[in-house]
Length: 198
Image 1 (cartoon, rainbow, N blue to C red):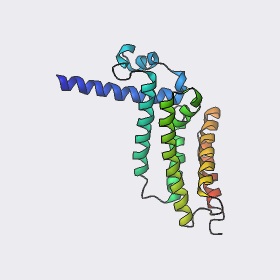
Image 2: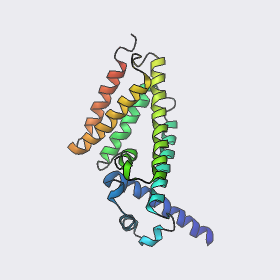
Image 3: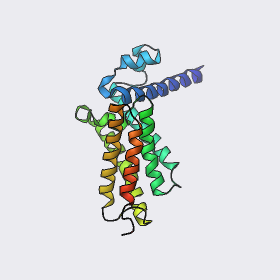
Image 4: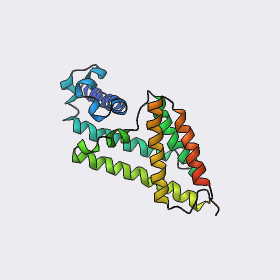
């Protein structure tokens, strides 16, 4: 009986995190409340406090969950060539855009960075640093294999790529046209590969 109750509690928490992710990506961090989440889950609002002491605690769990999911996803790409890994990064944004014009979780949080509690900001920065470190390795690998241009430092290429990826996601949402993300992906790869052997 105790094990069954614990399993139900874990299941409810995981469902809450999954649904909160969708609300975050669709409405932004301040765009939904515990009451909204409870209604989506079909439970009473006080029941959420059995899993999260506050909305901040939920936010921290959301960032942690995204970081773990992203790390696991990155592992599945480890055998790919640099350009294929980068292509997969844009494809991830494309899938977000297809699923009801959703934003990347990090972008959703970053849009409200100044209003986030310090603990959430710290978690967010850690996750962002992990993501940019992965992208930097892609750039360095691509340069080492004469696949990507070497006249621009890897750090700058990362900044360029992230800016284009997030911008294309924003544009796709405004225009209701996810294909814009694929278009920008092609342009980024063309830019990275131009003059690669020079």
